[in-house]
Image 1 (cartoon, rainbow, N blue to C red):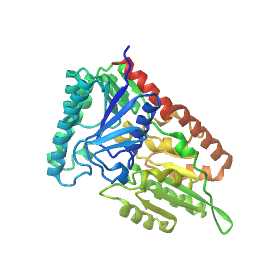
Image 2: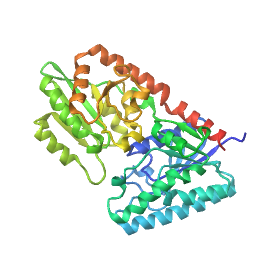
Image 3: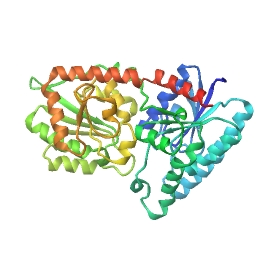
Image 4: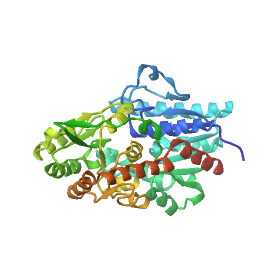
Length: 407
């Protein structure tokens, strides 16, 4: 069976840093490279945040992985420019796919999620040119999050049409959650064309960072941490309310919230919640930070928390930050949303709390604070699980084998 040596990945995200998606795709590409595959990214959208100067050209190279912008380098804000960006990007990508096929330097294409108006022209072109095409499927969007105005309704329809019909014609689908995996099974995609990969991380980039302890007036200060998009949807409000319960019992605690979103920040709302809970002086908000600094922030924490709410969007995904939490060798409290209990046992790899329940989250944090040996055991178990199941080198090898089988 013919090998796959030259892989093109198409995505609409910042790269190689700034978002959890960028982290996943960067690790995927570096994993492919470890197995002697050449990888090039075509980016449908410009960056939301500027890259360092050395990675801000039309075409760039990061550790041997090349990536290029197919329209604007920086993402426009005006709608007519966004539409222009989309038209230029799709046309450019189609031309480049055909050109690479003629030159013989494209063996497969991976599209990272997206909508039918982005992906359908690419799927048709790849099928016409006999290029195997795969999809990394990570989201089931809530209608409310997509249709913010009435005229955006077709965008929602196109997502449903793609995930329910067009995806059946792909050579293979990499699903991030069991909900998505089972969805594809239910619409007739054979198991042979499906693979379940919850996340991809570089374990060493987190575990090599040394712990940082903080002592105030001779007493250790326990830092509880969250890292990611600081949104109500991600349960950060529940975490703040849980921290109030924790802090009332253990005064030597503080809460670190690392992250924000570009545009529409909810940090003012979260700070108001902290004030109303009378814990504002013990809650630290960093705002957005560079992705490369995340391991350093996690190293300052004693317990890490993901308090995701029980929504369909959360059930369809696997929290990318969970792998990073594990890799940092910290005990984790996680709400029971999605595939969590399919992978983990309460008090073994992590503490499992009830979603949408600040009290349950708080009780699980308090348990860890009061059981030092359990903290150490869970931190090591979580790290071992991530190393076995999520490390980018072994995971990318699985995906390569899957792609070759489904050419």
